[in-house]
Image (tube, rainbow, N blue to C red; front, top):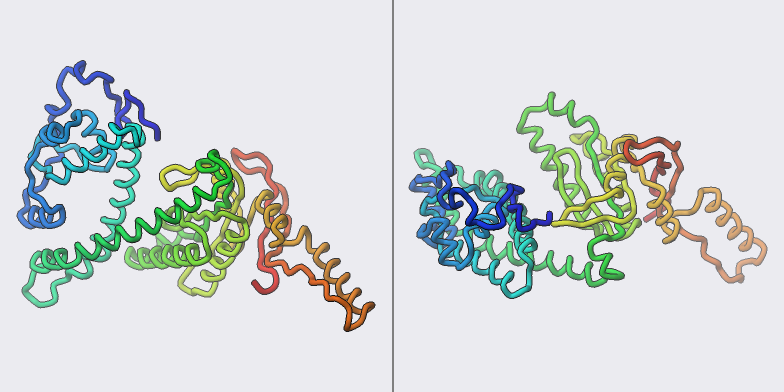
Length: 393
């Protein structure tokens, strides 16, 4: 999202000149007051490494930025307005200085700095929620009768915090290196943003019915197992998991062959797991716009539509994807052509005898079967192809 001078990071309209506000922003009465629970405050001090010292206005002034810009950074990171409560620390001031310093140095535009704050906030918010809900919650179960979770949580967080912090930085650097490598290998500057990718959706069939039949805990375990299996297979075979949507995952790959292998392995993995519903996958190949780790555009929409019409335990692809597989030699133009090639090779071997030079027969990994053309809402008439494994991969 591009943010201009008249729009705040959360989409709210702002005056380009703060002086025209009837009431200064820092005097607005907000209701999102920070907690005064003693344990929560102790944990906050432990995690942030600093005490509460500043109101938002004081933090902005100390950092040397306008209150308007500080509020936009704060909201972009996903935090609620806190009025004029004294709830911010030296770390908050330092973060404001760093972001505004990048803008002042000309390394980032102000809209880009807002995007940095938003993308980081959204990503780490989900990570933090997962760690508390799934990880810390399980570990902080009182080990002895009479102990409270409170007595366990603080020392546990104290021990885990430095290790988790180092691991987070390590993974981020690894991901940044991989993403940078993909950008450097782009054919031209336009391809850095608008790239040609294979995009696929994998969707559990009949998930809505399952939600009515399974208990919440069982449903949660099923979704976690599905997401874990998908994440592992996508990563192991060279793709990128873009996001998970409960009963559906979105993945991308730089080439059609990689995406085909991922899709078929996903279907195969779900088919042998008796606890899982059937899976259907739709893939399209074409130009994709990337923003903040997500993908957008007609190619993505087409992949989603193909998924909705794919048979269960099957992979449906678009014509561009099928053409790319045949171009790279991963699939034959047709099964008839493949049969002709094999027959011709056998005939040559018979005519020329055992001492003849061996001409290898193409070994295709995948087969493509054309399906009936059909109209797809918003995209016109498409001709999907059914993808299947062919021979030994």
